[in-house]
Amino acid sequence: APTGLRGTQYNVLVAIARARGADMTTLGVRLGVVRAGLTHALRALSRERLVESRPGSDRRRRELHLTALGRRRVAAAMRHWDAAQRAI
Image 1 (cartoon, rainbow, N blue to C red):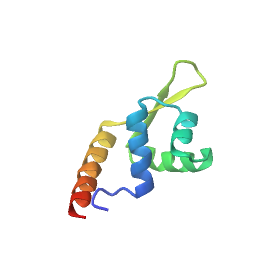
Image 2: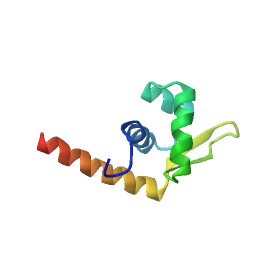
Image 3: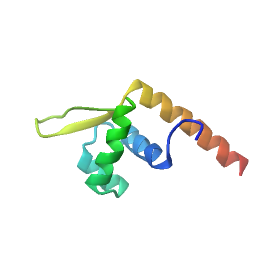
Image 4: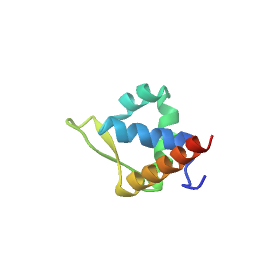
């Protein structure tokens, strides 16, 4: 892929962008993904510095957010997706 993202990674990044601070449970429900699969995907995205976890409203909750690099990568992927859809 021109952006270096797999389809599953793109889906997770877009869901995080739309959810704005959702925790893993909420994100998993929105994506229809079990926690283990989401943990695996998030670990890779965190390593690439596309996603970060921040403390939530209480100590048990961790909110997921895109980093600046993650926002740029999603924006680039969306441009490629739009171009591909127009070409079809």
